[in-house]
Image 1: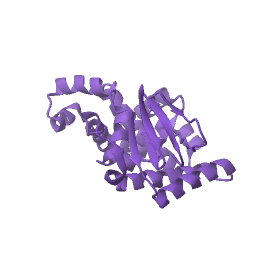
Image 2: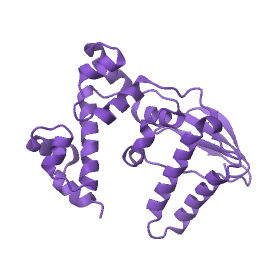
Image 3: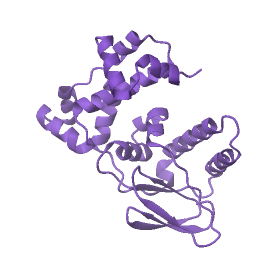
Length: 246
């Protein structure tokens, strides 16, 4: 909220936003903004896939913003929004206005610049989250977040027995709990995180396909190639050619 005020209805709840408020709305949550005067509101859209692919270290943290994003992306039940009051914090205001300017001018590399600025903005919120947080009581650590972080680091050798031990569950209960908490079973999640890492390596490293296969836990590169092609419709080599960062 750059100036003035507005009413913001989020998942059926209406909250008042005043100048200096910054609201993060979770993915797939219905919301609407009502402005009836000359107040100025900027609406910034960030794809869920962008958060997962480009801001992975943000999702690893144990803080208000990280917990909110992980739960919003990964958990079946989560808080619909997180409100901050950044007031007259010049650095954050300047970042928001510069992102808006880049979007309007749409010159070379504007998309990349805006993405980088958004990353800086979010990390500054993380750094001072407790200072800016105006409404965060519904955001808390969850087992879904713990499951997410487990796969994020253990994608290569993840096992249901190990995850169950970390959560304090039996393997059979853990299997049912994972499905209930995330909407996906253990095998689906394991594949999701292995392929996520594989895509990262294909785009950003010169590792061979066999090397990447081993790096994400496949003992047979042919099995990896077949599974990857079934998931994405193209082979790892074609994916690399289409997405390699020059």
